Image (cartoon, rainbow, N blue to C red; front, side, top):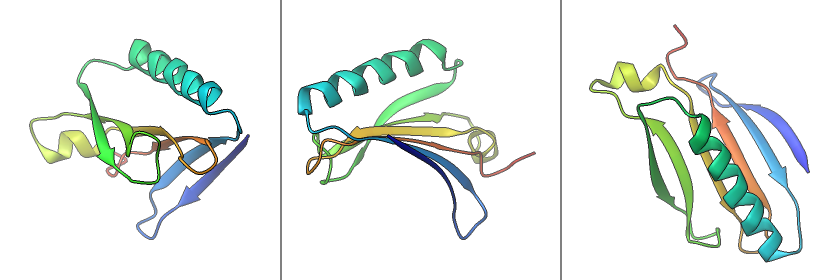
Amino acid sequence: SESKIMVDEDDVYQFVLAYSSEDKELSLELEKFIVSTIEKNLPEGFKKGAMFNGSYVSNSTTKYEFEGLKFAETAKRPSISIGVKKDDFQVDLTITEPLFKR
């Protein structure tokens, strides 16, 4: 597995964890375990959704974002995405810091 911190052009940080495996079923089980752990520990207000991406096994990644009444409320919370890639069964977990840091 590999982990790294990435910074985009807007100075937003992302923690990326990539678990490599050649075993599709093992990767799907790991994804299921991580999703379960996330859901047990996320505070109230986060909503589970899907982001279309054809390079992942389910053609999407699972995404967790805070659902605030105003954009400013949402932008003050981190977001999480996870998925298993089709080509090499790598499990990708990304945690993106809040856009508004204060």
